[in-house]
Image 1 (cartoon, helix red, strand yellow):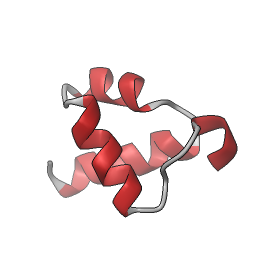
Image 2 (cartoon, rainbow, N blue to C red):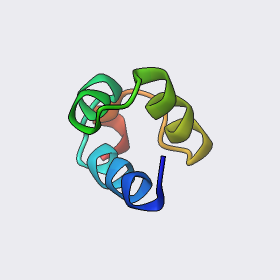
Image 3 (spheres, one colour):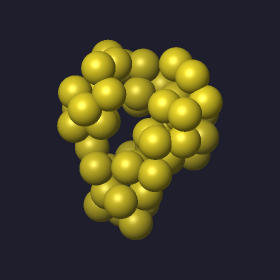
Image 4 (cartoon, helix red, strand yellow):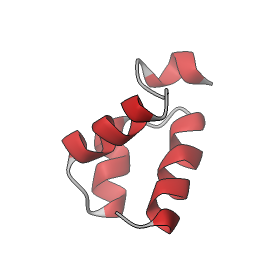
Length: 50
């Protein structure tokens, strides 16, 4: 995962998009997206992050 992808994941997550949708859009695994989000403090239900 490169820096551009990481920035996009953060952006989408803050919009309330779920792990699976982000993973599908970026051709990554859901677990990889989830692990990155947890490390960034963006875990939990997408709607509560907004």
